[in-house]
Image (tube, rainbow, N blue to C red; front, side, top):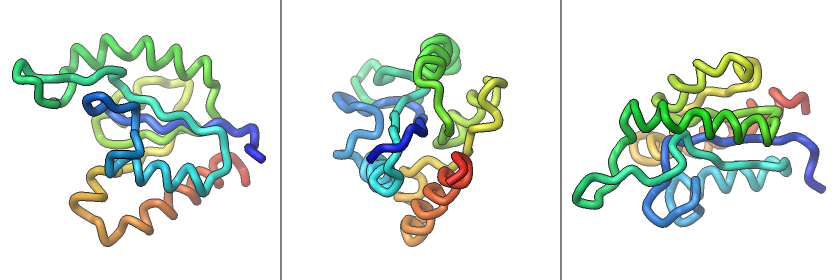
Length: 141
């Protein structure tokens, strides 16, 4: 049975033709593994809700202006979901979420799963376990 707790994972932006943390991506597989262990109502969002591309069609980091323009939608989504816990994934996301004062007591700041996958793969199981434990502690389980 799914519990009433609502957990939101927030990343930076989508990959081309993918949903946030799509299971076909390395980051998506990691987040999916975490969600499977939680048995909570989980949502996956991105700071920028679209795919930022170069003129050549390659994925790029969103600009400060794109992030600023996207924040009202993210705030609206968070109000609608009314989460018990938010997991901020990556430095750029964390920097922006620190500006949203009403959620400070429920945000967990973590490295982005792609960083762990690429640079600290040996720590991947510990990364997943740590996030699961932090979420359970945050929601009072």
